[in-house]
Structure formats: structure tokens, C-alpha cells
Amino acid sequence: MQGKLYIVATPIGNLDDITLRAIRTLKEVDIIAAEDTRHTLKLLNHLEISKPLISYHRHNEEVKTEELVNKLLEGKNIALVSDAGTPAISDPGAEAVKVAIEKNIEVIPIPGACAAITALIASGMDTKEFTFIGFLPQNKKNRKEKLEQIEKEERTIILYEAPHKLLKTLEDLKDILQQRKIVLARELTKIHEEYITGTVEELQNKIISPKGEYVIIIEKNGITQEKLEQMKLTEISIEEQYKYYETQGMDKKEIIKQIAKTRKVNKNEIYQKFIKA
Ligand code: SAM
Image 1 (cartoon, rainbow, N blue to C red):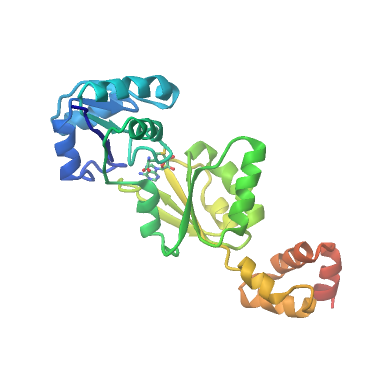
Image 2 (cartoon, helix red, strand yellow):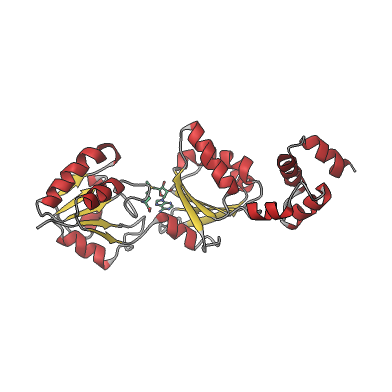
């Protein structure tokens, strides 16, 4: 009989954040496939579990998937874990799941901590609809496209970021977000857990040298495409458009930038009209 593939979530900081089912699964499987075997060994020692470990990480995912699937076909039950949180979410795992399904191997999720959801639920942002982006691409063109998507996004946005790249990412977000609110959820479930809130500029002033782990939660774009269309920008006056943006809480500088952008005119023209008048 074929074995089963268990996708097991592990804590993102606080070691108590592991479910009873996850512990039982880790105890019962034949093998644990881990992103970093040394890292997982610490968790297993804490749980007093001793199991054969094999490494399964981004750089050997393809080769190791074949090995995992062969072991599953031989009848071994395997638990797949990442360093922290939920496997396959900005972590290895998705490829193993895909191939296992193709081979008719049963895949069983064991839910638990996920940094994105943990950050979102205490951020105070709209949780009704949200979009998870994970890490922004490093490739210039792909990054620009993602930033454009964020600029227009009408749902709360969740990003992951490494501490050494946080300042660069905030700088990139500055142009597109203007006064939209950001919540930085730092060191979740750990001793120094904190939520830092503000506009990009405010956060840049607060965070000089980022340390620890961060999830970035970005407020949705309140000026929806739908609203913009309703306003039929070409049919309303610039004054009406100006007033509308004021009701949205935008400051003069932003309003001028936005009017210039939507009407494809020079910022100075608008500036002359409203500020100098
Ligand atoms: N699969 C994991 C999950 O969904 O929880 C995420 C893995 S991803 C490689 C690592 C990123 O998750 C970090 O760079 C950070 O953005 C976020 N993260 C993980 N643990 C965190 C924590 N305790 N506090 C804040 N962010 C965390």
C-alpha cells in the first residue's frame, strides 16, 4: 500500500504553537522531510521525537521530490515540514504536493501557524478580502509589475520581507502608496512581537535598522477603479475631482499628483490652479 504525504505546519516562533495533531503525525510517520534538518532537529528534540530526517529545500526540490515520491510509493508515510510556519507558502512543499497528487498519493494537510494569517488577524486591516503576494520579486521588471498591482489593489495586501531588504522595499512602496496605511507585524509570537503602523514615510522615520522577521500588511486602495469610473473623470471638473480626493483624506500634494496622473497633465498646471490661487 502507498504511504501518505502529510504537510505539517510548525511554529513561527513560540514553540507552543504546534497542534496536538501535528505532534502525533510527526511521531507516527516513517520519515520527516525538512527544509533544514538541523533546524527541525531542534523542534523534534523539544518534542522528544526521534525520526529519520531527509533534507527537502528549494535547491534540491526537484531531485528530492522524486525521492520522496518513490518512498511514498514504497509505502512510507512522510511528513513534510519547513523551517517555520506552513510549508508551500513562500516555502518548499508545493512541488511535492503536485507530484504526489499526479501519482494518486494521498496528501493530508496538518494546519497550524502561518505568518501571513497571524499578522493579518491582529493588524486591524480589512480581513474580509485580502491578497497574499509573499516576497516581492527581485527581478526589476517583475518587481515593477507587482508594485503596479499593489498600487491598484482593492483588497488588503500581505507581503513577506527579509529584514535586510525591508528599507529598500519601503522605499519602493513609497511612490505608489502615498498616504495608504501599512502595518509591520514584527517577530510574531516571539518575545519582541510588535505591530508598527503608519504611512511609508512614517515607518521610514521609525525604523532605522530593521531586526527580526517582518510581515508587511498594506491597506487596500480605497479609491477603487469602479469609483473612478463612476466619476467619469473627463466629465467632471478638476474642482470636483479635487473635492472628491479631499473626502478620501488625501493631502494637497497627493491630490495634485493624482489629478495630474489621471488627467495626464503636468503637475505644475494643477499646482498653479489650486495652491497659487
Ligand atoms: N511558510 C511560512 C509561513 O507561511 O508562515 C513563511 C516562510 S517565509 C520563507 C519567511 C517569511 O515569513 C519571513 O521573511 C517573514 O516575512 C515571515 N515570517 C515568518 N515568521 C515570522 C514571524 N515570527 N514574525 C514575522 N514574520 C514572520
